[in-house]
Length: 299
Length: 273
Image (cartoon, rainbow over all chains, first blue to last red; front, side, top):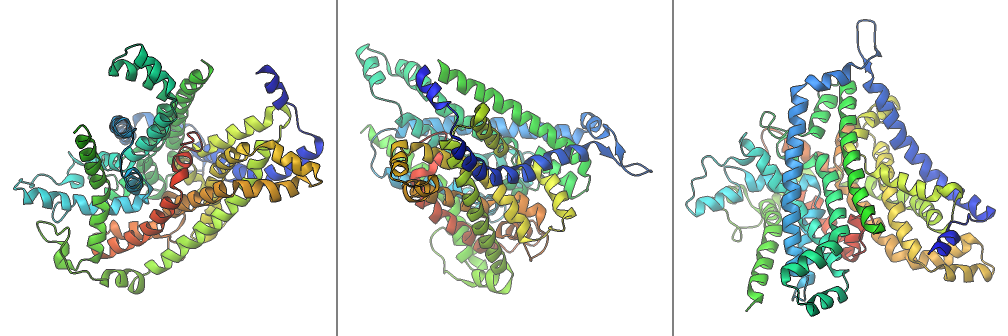
């Protein structure tokens, strides 16, 4: 182990290095120019405020965050959205993966159909679900009416009470297949030996699940949760199409509020300040997940 | 007998996944009487192509489609060209001070930025450069956010190519570049193709940057064109559904083509699937 590590850390020859730098430079320059530079630019934008004498440096944009109720409620919506969608997608995805981790007929067709929701452009997801949830002619209320259910109060995305719930359902519909596929891949990578050992030891099905499957599936679970969490916290597209953050503020998440602040009210400084809060939160959460992942690898 | 619940569950899941999409497809093919029928007509209606004609011939969705295709293809080609070279270097060479490892992680971290964080400054930068509402601005942005993905995917594929094969070519007198082109690239070709398809899908589906950086028909992509109509007061459901169906079809075909690499691609190479 030590030897192979030393071998691989030997620096490449000078001619190889020249080639490596040549190959790496264009990609690194583009990333610097269009992701890192904008970030620093955004810092300067967030630290400037307008006054009678033109823009000047100040922390006003960051101070405003703390007393802005719209910002705080957008944060609350984002967390409710992210947490409930994450939990449902995980439980459903895990359940499906466990049930289907065996030989079944028509598995490839099943996998192919599950691809449909998650590969769709978010805009199309929005159109599809506007059609499904429309209170007047949507397929859901139409079908319920067919069964004699009173759908008068079921206005879904138009109802302040049901709107957030509706957009969460749409997210679960679209992304449970992703969790399922990642966990299924994880399950299939588990070797047979630990299961045989557990059987010889006379473990119950629950014990096998708890002490064999779960620990070995943990890396796949963490990766699925990490990627979903990042996407959920910055959710924008589907909600923009489905409700535009409404009715009122009922489904306004943090990304939508930043968008509105920048591109409807043209307050770029405040939008930039809020975007750093979002960046900080996603960073902290991804670091926590990655710590857990690395803890797994070293033990 | 124990299998029956399993197949029942399977069937329900498949219906739940596909029925909403099928519903949109039927709306795009129904006349306005059938569209608003209660109870909804899932199967029996007289199909018509009038909404497709309306969307792509009468309205400007045809132009959005062309813009979407150009922007996706050009940005994918650029990201692949730059990203593959960088990925090869990171997979094969050890840079001083562990730079190759640090660089890889830094590149991955740029992919993790929420889009809205860079959308605000990129809008201001593009405005200063006079690039707002141009296809070029979208090509630049899509190339940038596909780059980290290409680098991570291709790095994984390059690492899987045995070094011995390449070293044999070097011993036979090939240069590094010659060995890369003649020996390594053919071996990673399937991975390269899958990566390309993923980039096409991501660029084709992208919404936020296209919404922020374009304003007129000159550079609007299909998703933004659809969104602009959906959020209007009087919505033409047939036209929307026809445009949505056309936006979806190439993606479904692509997704089926890369099924084998799907999990690997969606997890940025973390799960080999």
